[in-house]
Length: 306
Length: 246
Image 1 (cartoon, rainbow over the protein chains, first blue to last red):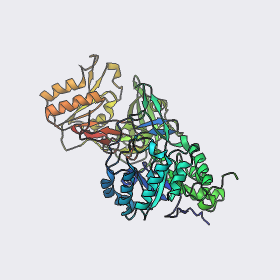
Image 2 (cartoon, each protein chain N blue to C red):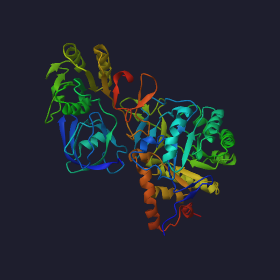
Image 3 (tube, rainbow over the protein chains, first blue to last red):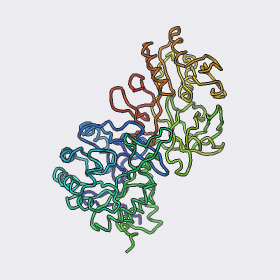
Image 4 (cartoon, each protein chain N blue to C red):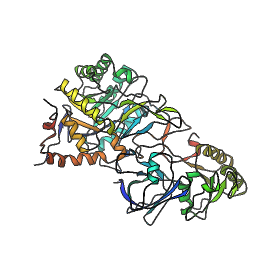
C-alpha cells in the first residue's frame, strides 16, 4: 500500500507536497533539460510586476555557509511579455502559481485582474515581503492593514484563482498572517527570505546589491522556517500553509509537514541541483514508507508537541 | 536529461604561481564547444555551498581540462584535490564561439582568460593565432602543449607590452576575419575598441559570480549596452563585444 502524497489546498489538490518556489524555477524553459516539470506538485513562477524591471547590478548573489544571500532586484519582463511565455510552463507543469508584486496597492489588483483571465493558472502568490525592493517590499509586508487591503483587492479581482500570501519572516509577529487570512487568503507562504548581509573584504563594502543587503536562503535558514511554520500552524489551526525556506531533501519536506505545513516550497537547492524538485518528490514515498506514514495529510502537524 | 555526473580527477598540478591545471575523466559522451563552461561541485558537503563555474579548456578521449587561479575558498579547496577524487560536474553549459568554416581568428587571452581560447585553438589550429598576455614569464602556465605567442608586460618572455598593443600591430599587418578574447574587463574594453577599429566581428567571453549556472537564479547578470542585463550562463558566456558594457 503506497503512501498518499496528495495535498488538498482547497482551491486545488496537488499530487505531492513539493513545490518549486518563486524565483528559482524561471519561466519553465530553463529547467526543462534537467527535469520533468510535471513531477513537482506545483511550480510558482518568478515574481511579475506590471512593468519590466531590469534588476540590480552585480553582485546580485553572495555565498554564505550553507546558504546564499540574494539581491536580484525582482528582475522580470513585465506582465505582457510574461503572459506570452506562460503557456510553455502551463503545458509542462502539473499546477502553476504566479507570484506577483506591485509598486502600489492598485498594481497588485491590476495584476490579479489580468491573471484571473488566464486558464491554466491555478493560484496567485502575492509577494508583500521581498526584502530587496525599497518600494513595495519590506514596508508593505510589515503593515497588516496594507496586507489586508492588498489581499482583499486581489481576492476580488481574481475570483477564479487561489490567493496565497507570501509573508515576511514570521519572527513572532502573527498580525500579518492574521490580516491576510481574514481578508480572504486561501493560504499563507511562510516565509520569504531572511534579511541578511555580508562584507566583501577586498572591496571593503557590504554585499550583495546596491544597498549592501539581501535575502538569505538555503539550509542555513531551515530551522527558522520549521519554527515559524509551527508558530503559524498553532495560531491558525485551519489555515493552509506553504512552507518556504531551506528545505533541501525529502526529509526536510516531511519535517516541515510534520511541523504544520500543508506543502513545501523548495528553492535554493535547485541551484545546487537543477533536478532537485523531481528527485525530492520521487524520494518521498520511500521515506514515508520507512517511517510508517500513510499520507501527507495525516502527517501535517504531527510533530508539534501537545 | 542533463545532470551533474561523477568525474574522476586524473591530474591536478600547479603550473604557475597560484594557477592550477586539472584534468578529469568523464564517462559522458557530450562534446563541449570552445567557449562553453562547466559547474564543478568541489565537495560532497555543503562547504563551499555553490558549485564553481569554470571555462572548459579542452575535451578529448573522455578527458576534460580546466585551468584556474586560486582566489578564494572554492578554488583553494580545488587546488588541494588529489588524483582519484571524484567531483560532480554539470556540463556543457552556455554558448560557444562562432566557428564558421575557414575563419581566421586572432585570439587574445589575458592571464586565466586562456581556457576557452586554448580550446578554440586546439579545434582550429591552422586558422587561429593565439596571443597570451601575462605580467611576467613565470606566469606563463607550464602546460604540456603551449600553442600561444607569449606577451609579457615586463618583456621577460616573448613580445613586451600589453596583449592588446601587440594585437593592434598584428591587425594592421595581418589578415584576420575576427577577434575572440577572454580576460580582465579592462582588457576586453580595449579589445572592443580594436575590433571597432579593424571593423571585424569581435566576441568576448565573460565571467560572472554564479549560483545555478543554468539560468534560473538571475545572479550572473552583466549589463547590456542596449539596457538591462544578460545572463552570462545562458545568453553567454560568449557575447558580441558591442552588445555588452565593458
